[in-house]
Image (cartoon, rainbow, N blue to C red; front, side, top):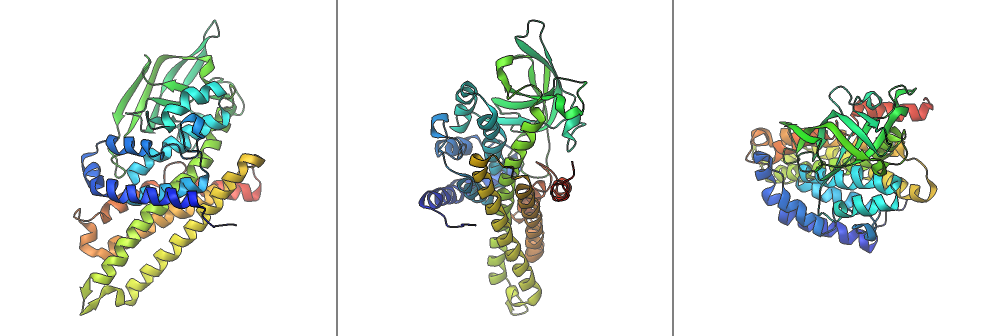
Length: 389
């Protein structure tokens, strides 16, 4: 596994680091407390190319590889997980699926404005009664009598960027009698400005509060047949393929917040004096520092391995499901571990909103949940290893 970074990798990593530390860190606390969508920040990120890193230039992106994407995600997440969540959805969940399964017209129409940062994209799979068991979705899309469009009705929940999204990839049932059930799911490209689309309640979340999340509803929404992504009935395959890519992004996000918690703890352990010496001189604190650092470096290697597998898959068509699941599982649990240890090391100050430590703790938790919980990742890994279907 070649881990040497080329000039482009170093360039985007450094650009993301400078932007994150100078533009995001000073305002992250404000957006977390207010719950406002960080529109000005996202606009600047679009201008710098962060919203379409792996998207070819002709579709509005910067045409780099997955290593470049994870490097940038790590730096943005280190400054603020909520901001990196918006970036992740645009890059992985929205653009990736259209690039892989869309027609040339769809790529030009639906990817370019999102990858260039002019608009916000979203991904709509989860429903109130369908989370990890995605095959049981109830949103229906029925072909019109003249075959020109689908009529969509239903409700989706926990849609990241839902309140601000201009476009989204939607998954709906087109064949209620398909066996197994997931074969009856299709993917659609949705313009949220059309009649029949509306947003519901905005979720009052524990963390990533600046990342807008809401329910969305479809009431007799008319979707032209040319806006079907891939073929009818291929929606579940598309959804799972997209999630493979998305999990690498979430793993990178988790690594970023783990590093933020670690760096803060390292500094505090050097500066905080107790019993006449820096608390870093005590073995219990040293153990925490050692465990945090070890897990962070292991996470980094797993993420790079998954990123290289995804890059190779462009040519081979091979799946990288297991690599992505392992990286996401380990990195997300590392994020939560490091955030927890950071609170312990900081003591009362770790519990106070005067420092960002408690925000790291709240934000880290979501990485163990969305785009497949830790339990689902373990199931995916085990089934692939056991070759169970």
